[in-house]
Image (cartoon, rainbow, N blue to C red; front, top):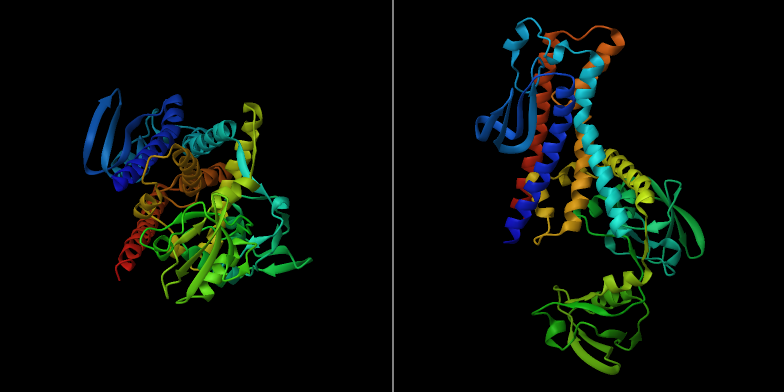
Length: 444
């Protein structure tokens, strides 16, 4: 059932984005009295799952869920309908319209994607506010695990700046900003230090599959999870227990719990705890390789530090716009990781299979809207890349025409479309191959 919900959520998100993106081309085309021959969700290679002609346009659903398209008369696109282009231009064809109208038509899809993200983020801030941990409330700095240590951080560090930009809040984006950054300024042992971020550490962080590596150093010692069939469960440890000492050593931070467990592999562990106000002492054994089976109640600890900033509808509008721009900027910055020969971020790029695995196994509206907005920005960015066969490729040729005063030849447009198609198919092969390889690795 979980996989079914993941697939349904992915298909719904893609369908909404594709329909609205193509509607962004369709509406200005109709406004400028340009004939739209097809409007398709997904690609109809050889056959369609559904199609119906209404007026001059055939509306349909294809079987290949890799996007969608509108086929506009008099335009060289992925259909490569060159026979139509050999005839004299008709008034209702794309090529007969002024360059500025064609530019509006081609930019319509990415404009809708951008506006959609802006609207979603606006309503999310209006309804939910913005929850984050102010860095000035993190009194004891960060808890650093082996991944954070590889990047260059140390337990107790307080992050002050990333690439010269002051850090005011710890939220879901701070980890990303550090991965995209070159250096950070931290407060360590009372001194400000400039840390050059390690590419090897960034690679380790990416390979941890999105695990949060920027974590406040918590003084809360309450156990939030006890795994079934674990030694912790076997020896009577319960959710809600508060750890006081381990082997007689008084605890102050949760990372000390982790250190003590690691240092006592294969040995007895004496845990002094508080349960419902009563002091207790429990004996357990730390397995040689498996975890003890307890996790910190991080959500409780972080709720104590977090604040939620509320927004009126009017104040949520500019905040939603800023969020959309920030997401777009991060989309651009991620290419620093993708093409870095040490980080090898391209190995973490996900296609449809990988994206489905990111979906929650139960329906989550918060995730749905957040992912829809983020992916809408991604779709706008990708489509603006100056690659023939994408909107950005058509825009590139149109800008050349508007600047030079003459359009590219039909042969140039045709060859550009073919080259762009080959590039896109090559990228899709790499992305799908990466998804499949990641699945195979789990069984090796």
